[in-house]
Length: 366
Image (cartoon, rainbow, N blue to C red; front, side, top):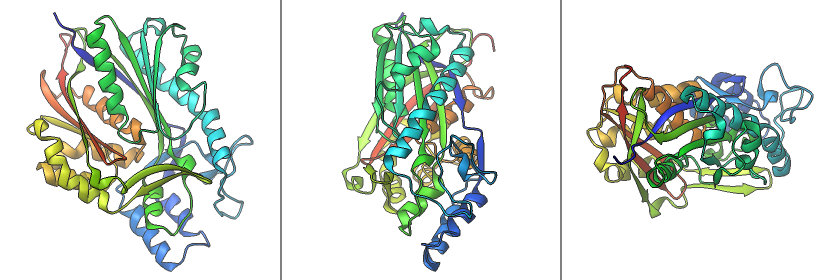
């Protein structure tokens, strides 16, 4: 019988520092280089983001300040600093491995899979760069077989978990005994910066830190799983300059123009045509306006959008890890019947629309 590559467990983790959206809004509003118009944009963007809390590795952004080893990002009187890209990336190298490892441990424990049984490892991140990379470090951190096949998807952006799951599906189809560990970790807050540029203000209002891991294998029949049915990719050339992610002198720089939700709204129906009629949805919450445009284009009601809006509200946009937070909730949803279809969508630079159809399997234990 052909293998049924499926997500059998998802583990998630966020840094302990939790920021209220109002706090970080007021911190940005108080920066002296912002004029009255920019401060108005700060309030509009932060208040309209439909986010209540976000998590960050930067304890210096919290009201109670930082520990002795943390990267300084604000002065005692609340002025936000602009560390160099090298300093930000060094903080990524220091802090990201623990998030990768903890998300992976939670997924392995949930799936009851011993670390040495993992045959393939796929890591994903776009918010830092170093080598040996997170894939190599996880071998030692988790006790994986040193001969595990390793792949890293770097700098792909918010949609990167989808091609990672697609690769995992292909690996299990080719090797039915394979057990694939997919781990996404993003430290977006390392690249926050003060600017009167409306695009930077929007980015600062949205992005957060978090990590998620999934175990993909030929699904056992006794437990709930998400069968990976099929995937699609659409590249919208019109959006090539509207969503970009580049390396600057003071962190990685995001371009996220007001055209992005409009383009997504125009193009997503064609990109997701085969998903129409799905029983549940996991839509990457690039922002509230993107979720609104997707809902309108696909005629989705608020019940269908609720899992995505909840993750946005509680965590913000954690780039590639975010879609796995939503799928985690759907995997655990006992109200979804066996065989229910899930339409998944994520958006990245390019402008890229990644889509997937999954099937919820309740398992015989249910």
